[in-house]
Length: 84
Image: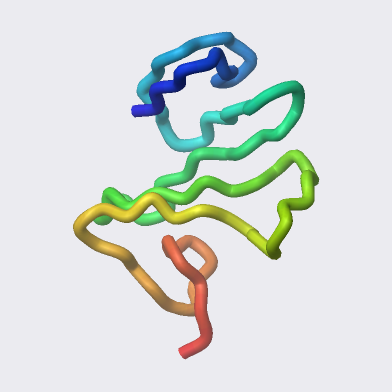
């Protein structure tokens, strides 16, 4: 669920509240865009992946939205990829 004080876009539709599903694109402001992902079906931890090419003040590939579980490892479809 995403809820905003100011309108944002989810898949091109302007909203202030929406239930996100994997693959949804969330646009903040004029063009800053994230993709919402649930990479591991058995975990409710999610990932916001920056896809618009914007540069943030620090190096960021994505934002983890933590739930009760987080799956780490080298596989591409895990919530958080890391070397073993």
